Image (cartoon, helix red, strand yellow):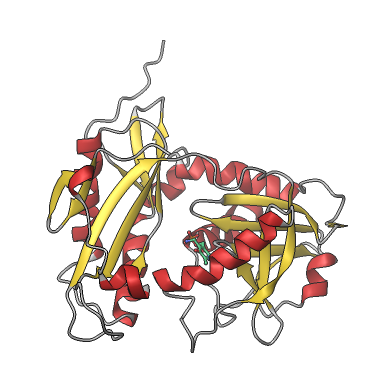
Length: 315
Ligand code: PMP
């Protein structure tokens, strides 16, 4: 992986090599940190880098921070401004991934959230695909269970909670699968290790409700809007049983890093025809157009990084 040249660290942009923390840092030892994962897409024709739904990501980031008793004098707007400054300094001209992190910065021993120093870092690095096999993934139901809202809330992107995601992912990959789906304590489908899940049954798009211990995904919201507006589909948010997934016509996962991953097999059972279905395929195409700033109806989701947009000449 290519490391960044710079990072926002302790209130300013510094060379990445200077953005270092002591080994006793609270957030590192106890997982008392929250993060975001944002993508920016390079549009070659316009010579522009577009950050996708940056304000929505920072809104969720600040909500996650609130859950973890962090207090910042920041808004989604001020965090976006810092990110723009960082990206312009990096001068990226390719697809990238932005990682804001808020953490308990004290170098002390003691498990708690209160009376600690909160700090924010932001770094951005070149990025391409996250799930290698994103056109015909084979997934399994994990033997692990999703964390419950009363354990570590999945709706906050809390660093410590990602030990759960890592267990889910590694067991699946070591067993030969591309990814895993995970169930809630009461046996309903929740999500993937770092992505939400959708199925199509009888032409209706169905996804778990936000009370089934999912991260309230921004790609999930994007896909719901695109399916409704562009494909005229009905969308239902409800509890999903494991065997409904086996019987679905189409199945896919969504996430900022993962984008839209077509699942064609679950636990060695073919989904639908065993090939990526037409709805998944349409949504994948639409999503790529939207994130790269090609669909004017959704341009409010694209934040340009560079000041001048080169308009393609007519000849
Ligand atoms: N669930 C989990 C656990 C995740 O980590 C992610 C990735 N952020 C998602 C779902 C998808 O969320 P989003 O579309 O906002 O990236």
